[in-house]
Image (cartoon, rainbow, N blue to C red; front, side, top):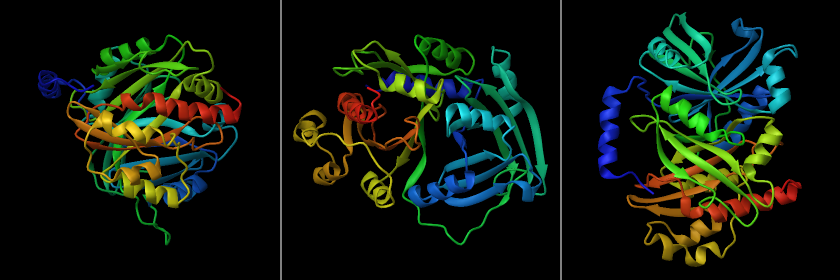
Length: 378
């Protein structure tokens, strides 16, 4: 599926009139049991670079946070320093995972006011942070589960990350893997909760439902789920929302909800301009990916038509292909990055396509089910 031409024009108009103008994803914050080791993992395995640090040495005696960056991607890895801290309780319940999807805005105070007057629940009132490098304004609201959205205004800041952090330089900085920016972030919500959160993004944040997949689109012999894709006015931020659907066995969303102990971010899609080079680099560094049967590639070109990439290379790496009216895309999904079968990443390269790989759903979810079966959770 793709956006009709007139709908794309409407999106441009919406961007002009948008009460919540978003400039994209500012950073993704993870709550983890050991931030130092997690930062090392994302550097070593994914090619991020050291950027900034906050902890006891900077006057922060409650948490330690390591900021790693790659092109327009910023991850913040945060750990509590005492068991009594609320973050420790969050990690005990959910395991390592994503707490905040932070969005860059021109005015964090106005973003908070606009969403609050439309019914949002406040997580952080507008707060001004200052140091010698300038000013950052941050505010925040709750979304599904324990996840939050921060609004980040940093147009008047020139430091490493934000006040409270210092530049973090390390001797070890591996080369990047070609990851560029956040393409989209997917949330898993409970039974019959998808439309509630669709309404939240429509009414409180001014998003639109641009794509819908039901259990006839996303199903296998054993399990099913439903999904709606929410997008802001300019299309810079997209949040698909999944909920379980009835099936013979436990779906991937049900497994997530059980092991995460609630609703949360299922995966983050990371964009690249050369998925073959990126996935090769990631595999060489130890990142593990889901694999579909070799038979997938026997007929895929009949479905998607001509592509620029070498099919043999895609087959060897396990990269999936799909096409919509505006082009095609290439995508692959990692296995869960935590011991709990919860958070994972998608690597995606778009060659014009605006869709999300509907033609790959069956093969992908069968691959996920094979992993579920190995864990005893299908």
